[in-house]
Length: 616
Image (cartoon, rainbow, N blue to C red):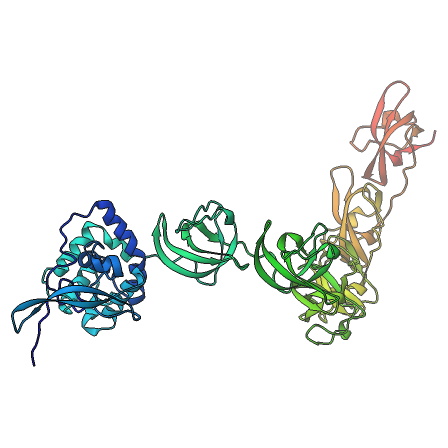
């Protein structure tokens, strides 16, 4: 059998390299044409090599070298950049080649069929598939070649080309034209199926089609293709959902789409100014109607980007209501709000019984859409005692009754109180007075709230039911009132001795709650001479004796008088008659008041005790 060694003027895919029929053209290629060729093949090469784990820079350098910057006959007429013989999907391109018969030593012309590709990408993909699917080229794969230089050498060791300088030629092209930059390809910003928006500054697609009429339009990404143009690496096929699409939108002209304002299940209201649906159907007869969103579609009409299929309570619907013509019907109750289960409530939306919680008060924790019966929302209600109802329909809720007592209010434990909601004894604190510090829902016995009551002395009751509280009795004595220490008084609430102040008269400066012995209040009593008792229990006070003499009244110094309260002698004024100008509390000797006396001759005594005065 004769064996013919065939030398071709093309570089065939399996690396048998002869003359340079296509790549031998020594006509200089202009720099602009070179850059145009790089831009032409880069997207397809990036996509093909990315899909097969190869270096884009290597494939682009091969295409440059083997097609003479795309000027070869095969590149020009068949998008065949690597001189691959055969047919692609039944398509081929015939080229007359000179072949050498090694048996006869003669050259002869023959017609050979070369693959004809429909695009740059398919030519690049065929080349990439050959390298990826043949283990002999495993040194070219990116996972085995740390750098493009290593991959270039891998082509040689794999037998792709017999020219020992082939790797160096590729490396030189890569370095000269910075083809390495194509090896790093950022992931596309948007993925197939993602909803995007045409930027407001978009002018045209990569194929020159006008985009200004679709600025701000929303659509869905149907496909993504590498495209090095302007500042973009990708272009996108965008479907606007109404039979319109843009097939070549550059990445720079896209932005994340605004989110649809309403979701499936939302309860919405048709605006009173709505006139037509996106499909032109009349909306005026449904102005003000409320319904539930059944589906959401992209629809770039007027100022809207979405339209909604809305179903009403009577079963009718509008299928393409524009977003601009809808508003959300908010839930009646919001998280944190206190609500009450209606007496007509039967079951939660999940079927759980509610009849045993009728009248209960709780706090809304979560609100969710739930279109059931006459409701469009359901609520998670916390009753504050570890019990909750998680699916209460809106129709079964009312605003809760107000708590009887407020934070900061003074309250009294009723005489009938027995225990707190947590079981703690309250009978020992009946009639005690305290201040409400906080309250929470508590559905127990006849109450809907419980209270944290602070008694002001480091003691408190944290779970007093509302039924066990009342408005307290008011203090017997008020600020500014004159009072007297009872003769039975022993000590103040802080243990200070009071026996030496029995019968003393003073003025109340303040009062505070104090539950001790038979008292519920204590008082700060000022005796008017720099002395005071700060914690006198109410049980140890009585209304003060009235002063015997009034301002303006004439009085006489008794004959037994010896000295004023400040020690000044009164002996030389015994029997004198004068007029009371002022009086003050003064607890001295057996007196509780002292008087300022002015005599007709102009003399005065400023501190005459009551015991030393009489009517003239």
